[in-house]
Image (cartoon, rainbow, N blue to C red; front, side, top):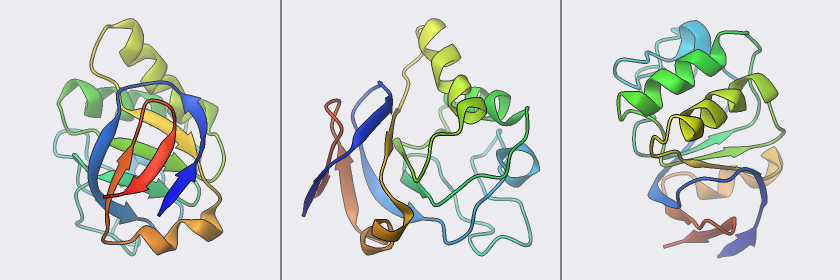
Length: 136
């Protein structure tokens, strides 16, 4: 299975087990930047780690601090291998842009509609620097 996605923020290609969120999340207060674990007790994926996984986000819950959390995840090597988003979240993606400016290894972020994301749950997925999403 292969999909060409729209690149939101260029970055390093990434491969990992797909973690498909079933609900939107706020990175601020919802993800622990020190470990990469989902800490929002109301979120269906509470306790799961996003570190090194290909993270599928059907949406985000805005917070102006989300970019700082994502930047901390990149710096601590707990960031996802790639971000797959239903729609761009400029504040969240700002964290990746800052990481690139800091010359830190930065995961790629691409766009794929939420209604197509569920089919990747539990699969090993690769996202190339060209935005090509492939089930390995």
